[in-house]
Image (cartoon, rainbow, N blue to C red; front, side, top):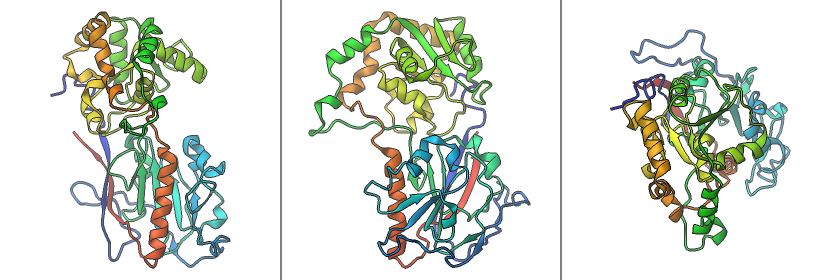
Amino acid sequence: MNRFPFVCFPLLLLFIFSDGQQTSPNPFHLLLSDDGTGGPTNAIPSPSRVKKSVQNPWEKQKKPIILGWAGLDLHHKYYVYMTNGELNNSSCDCVFTNDTNFESSASAVIFHVRHYFKPLPKSRRPEQLYAMMSIESPHWCYEKMENVPDDYFNVSLTYHSASTIPVPYGQLTPIAPLTSPEEIWSAAEISERMSRKKRFALQIVSHCGAPSGRDLLTKQLQKLIELDVFGKCSRKNCDGQKCYQQQMESHFFYLAFENTVCSEYVTEKFWNALRSLTVPVVLCREVVRESGIPDDLYIAADDFDNATALADHLKALHKDKNRYLGYFNWTKFYQKRWVPTVKTSAFCQLCEIVHQQMEEGGELLIQISTFRLQIIV
């Protein structure tokens, strides 16, 4: 039972993906509501099915084109991989571009659904894959996605493990026999990091009035504990990565409250705290648990009856060094590294799917037959 009713109830949204073959896809198929009566009447039509009009210059080298569509350039975290040559110089045997002149000859087209991705492609080959990508929660994609036909996308790249290609913000990497000593936290390093901590709790936020209700909990905690709040929702500013890292390392706790509470939606807020050896405080334990993250390396607000109980727990940990250090037992089992080139490998996985499709004779290998946003209550 969630003891903070405002924390885990509002707008719990989840991308639902059900992979399967669809023998005769209807290009105007609408998203169905729960009662099956049909979705919006102004659904986006699928583009007309045509042959290539602009040839692939790399076809002789058997290098398929993966095209980043309109809107992708608005999201720097991914766009850099499409333009700075990193992917084209990697082991991925595909050509990555955002040149829409290759619209019809691209083997796959990636749409960043956090932003409006119009104008839509005018044509689409039968074997051409359409991939939807977003690392934002479904709450921020709903308006853009509500009119998308059920069979529009073939592949999904999101933070959720149910995606065709999961792209999480971070992940724990177990220590292995061949792990470099530099990737393992030593007792001396941990002790040195603890010596830097002079302040109690920190929060850095730029989105005010978030649907998760985090603003309310933050205001309550500010009355109960020493809490430094930086960002657009505060009068304090912390400009640049250097300031951010210094503040993170100088505090005992970090309020890693997300703007929405969605299944497996654990962002850089959590991972940056963990990497800095600062204990993360999250809104909802189940969200983090679903991501496969052990329970004993963070604190969840919904474990407590109210803000006062949470504040008292944090104060008790602050006074008890051994209990506080217990939240870093994970360093004995997991490496310092927490994002092992996950974004690059995601695009390489898409490249592998494209090659597999080419070898199989052009048939669609992945078809999202049920694709919708669902409110979980």
